[in-house]
Length: 189
Image 1 (cartoon, one colour):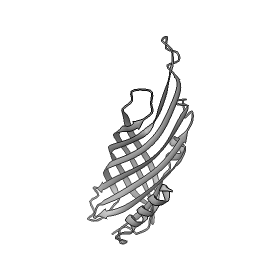
Image 2 (image 1 turned 90 degrees about the horizontal axis):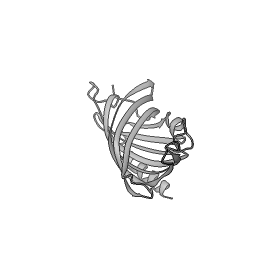
Image 3 (image 1 turned 90 degrees about the vertical axis):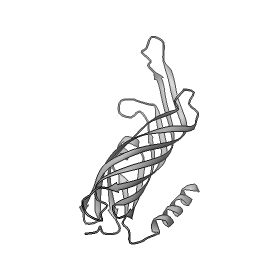
Image 4 (image 1 turned 180 degrees about the vertical axis):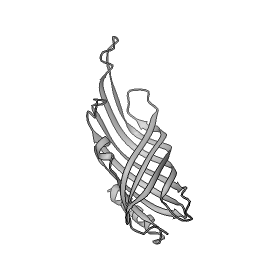
């Protein structure tokens, strides 16, 4: 039951300072590209900053152009967003956010380079990783307390323990999001 414990801890952490903005979001691109679900909780931590916790799961087979035979993952990402809007106190507009990610992923690709004269081989990655990166984006109010969030990020992740059969110590981590969310505390004027 670690998922229930995690949600309980998050609820306690995000309930402190109830006057701050609290936003719940989901990434609309996630089901399309990752075949799973995502959930984000963002809480204002300063005049123009917020902490965001993002949880997601994905499971996709033979995606788009048959890049892999199996891809399954779950991750937890925490980021501190710094908004650069001109208003004195607002967590809307342009932002940049350093992030930290914990991830488990399993990736299977069979018959890589099957048309290469030397023959084909299989790639199987299965392991836990930690990553760091930077996200930039823009968050805006769509209607009343509803908002839209656009973001993209780039970082690097390293495997902690992996059962790969290959020499892959890490990978480039890319993030892309188009999220919709609801702000439970009206934004400041």
